[in-house]
Image (tube, rainbow, N blue to C red; front, side, top):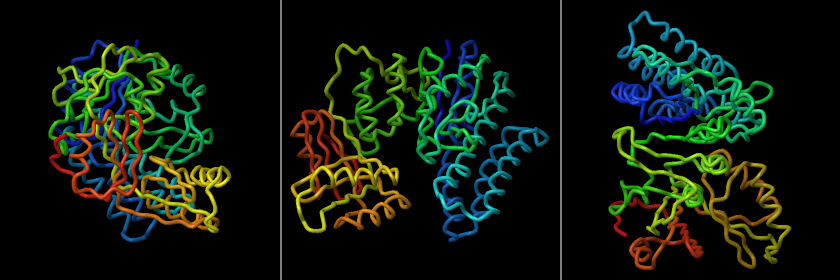
Length: 424
């Protein structure tokens, strides 16, 4: 049985970390592995900068692209002899981006996004495959577009599970296979992506299709924490977590796991481990079905860059089912996911990620039939297993715009301020 490993950008952000990943994988040389790599370091952000310059015409995209080239060239120079074939292979990938930049932008921003930003993962897998081969870790590189089949919902593609399972089973044959996270392909052979940070989901798709023994996501943290240790002094490691709790934490925005990752693993009962690439021998966190006891430690999750949109009927009549149906139809049209919602007699409020391309278009469409008010620069704070004392400390000096409470979860939309050294 295969084990699926996923390494994020932080794990391969520089030569030192690449060597460390090589050491980790060498220790698993006798295991059957499928290894998923994200783009190196902050390359996804850098390529988004290239895309921004290309679409907005606010900078020369070729100059911005040169920064991405220089980043990879520095790594290549430190890892390989100058005559190594990898230099040509990496150059050819950059030529693919340059071909896109020489054309006029597509009317569909999401399409352009997927054609340009996806190259980051191809760059990382080419480099990692060559480096691992160089140190004696035999591997074969598989193109994720030959494995994961999707619809054409660019930037948030939906997986065709039947086709994908068949393609993965037919292609994954070698002892050590390397592929790209985050990426899929339409039936017309156009590149798609699975959503920001979607490499975790790629690992889950592969594990589901192969009925893998386990999935290991290698991070720069000890495992899944009760909250971000950079902001919360009492953050604790969650050692064993039931699938359903992990699904809740991921859905609310826990950055350590992509929200779509858990469900495929739960369906096939495949355990998920979150381990530190900085301390690979530590146990980390295990997410599994059977957890006899789970401590109700308060877990605090912060999602920044939120916008609160309040929607009312233009005649200030009651918000009824037909209004809500129309609102959700527009949310689906613009591919906007709701992080929190609340309705009163005459208004319906939603808290969503403030995407600079999707949200303005959504608001314009909403304004045809509704009065629309919104607040930007907000954070959504979710507290699982809250207790009143911890909530009071957390809310100190915060301006709350919206609050919602259930048996286990408290959600608060607050005006965004730096959150630092909070004790709960």
